[in-house]
Amino acid sequence: MTLESCVITEKKSLLTVEEAQQRIHDAILPLTENVSVPLKQAFGRVLAETVFSTIDLPSARNSAMDGYAFASENFVTTLTNVGISWAGKPFEGELKKGECVRIFTGAVLPENADSVVMQEHVTVDDTQIHFPDDVKLKKNIREIGEDVRVGDVLCNAGKTITAVDLGLLAASGIESVSIIRPLKIVYFSTGDELVPLGEPLTRGKIYDSNRYSLHGLLQNSCYDVTDGGIIPDDKAELKRTLTQAAHDFDVIITTGGASVGDADFVKEVLAECGDVNFWKIAIKPGKPLAFGKIGACYFFGLPGNPVAVTTTFDIIVKPALARLAGTNVIKPWQFKAICTTPLKKSRGRQEYQRGVLQQSDSGEFYVASTGQQGSHILSTAILANCYIIMPNNCTDVEIGETVTVISI
Image 1 (cartoon, rainbow, N blue to C red):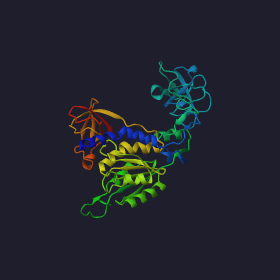
Image 2 (image 1 turned 60 degrees about the vertical axis):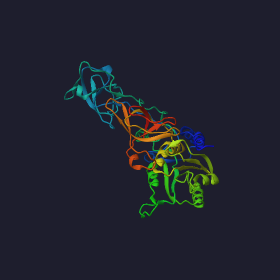
Image 3 (image 1 turned 180 degrees about the vertical axis):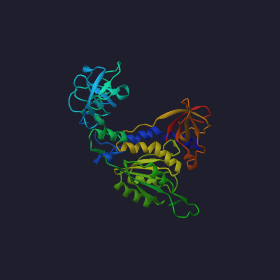
Image 4 (image 1 turned 135 degrees about the vertical axis):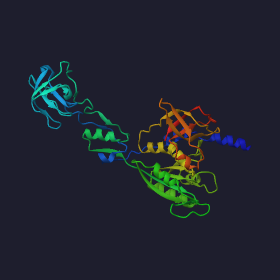
């Protein structure tokens, strides 16, 4: 077999990005264990159970603005002000013919009142309130339950709680909610060449940057994250460390050691102490990516190059963790954009090139490459606010052509 046919055979055997994502989706069972927490502690967490309202919102008819309230059946253009309805201190009693009350936003309406006219539209003469001839009746009223009725769904199970959700739940009197327990994640870097920050570099050594990238990428209220440190290029040590971690965590993420070098033991160790679902996918950067399980613990073996780490995390690992944490996973929005720089690409793998996305005053999207796209080059990667998706069979892109992008 020629070298060329070997390359073709390998490319045909690689999973596409979509196939890898589907394999992971099918393999993962979302967490179901839950805990009850006070409402303020629920922000950013995933609801384990659907929450229903036990009250109507509003719970009483009230005014939508500051003004004067009256009963439309008794309306004449001049009414006598007989009191005030404050928010929290309602006017007690019924309005008689020819009467109105001063009312403030959110204040409860008198029993038979059904209209409010804003204060700017009236003329006040002591207790006499003069209304315009063209006054609109039965306006500016918030009816009972017009927002939420008793028994309505407030938030569905699987929803990640936002600030607005907290407001709605609090308005409905919900003190605590049931949420999915935090996903326990540990991450490691692998390689004899890695040196922790604070130590001097010697010839052939590099500082470990991947754990810092993962630290940032894993900032999420739904995750309980542990930095496992650096594992040397020692098969026995790698196996011991991963086996122990699998007992204590839901997810293990490693960087490096997943390729085909003599010191790349990740796939071999995963096969010995767990199960390899797949290894290598048709993505660039990041082809040497392993996914599997060690016992009940899910395992992601990411490449060692720093840009490949962030890219494969965004495209492969992030949606997988979201599914595992019980979140209703939302596919990232894709945009069509006009490319303003030429892009280089060979067939065979789906590329995620880093780009800068901008929108013109007329609403059109334009994207430019950040520059060098090597999987080791962080200095241009930090400029990106999007990925330019270049499918397997796509080749070079010329200035003015349309491409697909997803925001980072």
